[in-house]
Length: 257
Image 1 (cartoon, rainbow, N blue to C red):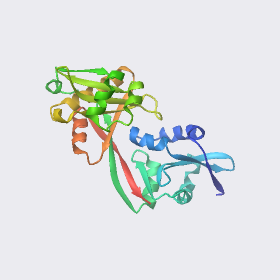
Image 2: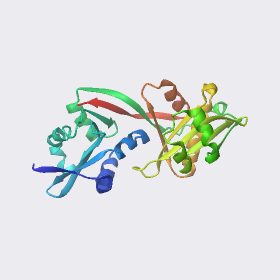
Image 3: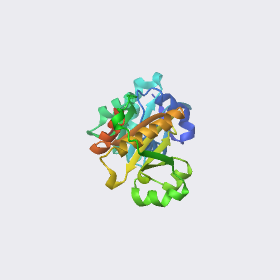
Image 4: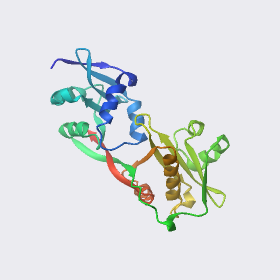
């Protein structure tokens, strides 16, 4: 096959990316999504027909690879060239992306787990796990300083996230005890990543769980499916997500190429 590769942008590959994402058997969260969006994007062309694409983050991290069904019999040949672009030496791959994952397995020297991706089990939370004295509100500009003070660098851009109405404040007996975030996906329709931060002296008493339960409720009221993610070795975060009814449906892997 005489194919060529052309540097492109997110807008030009949007249609074929949506086609590839629609074939995944699970969602990935905002962490991987942000890496994909900030990547350099390339079109794979047969003459001038777009038959696939791939994306590279900060020159060395491959974040996406996809080809249309009718060209997938040539995908190993193409991937062998893709992995040599820029300075690629590793890859992020979502286990829900079977096509990309198989190529990583073919060419990787080492694969390790990076993160869990969770979906909501929709199992009812026992009533004794729901805090009766816990309340919440949408964060405002007046809350920015207190969020920064208590959450450190947990949130990427507090000012912008408050402006976008993504951050929430959790209260117990009128004291601020937690912060929550809902980040609507830029790649999936009606999907959002949820996450929370609990004040250091208020942990292990159900506040994180109740913060996540509230965030799920906000999502469902707006016809949005909540998902979440956490670092693979953050066992406390994993337990908190599970206690809020979330289940680890898939994984993010990091592979050396």
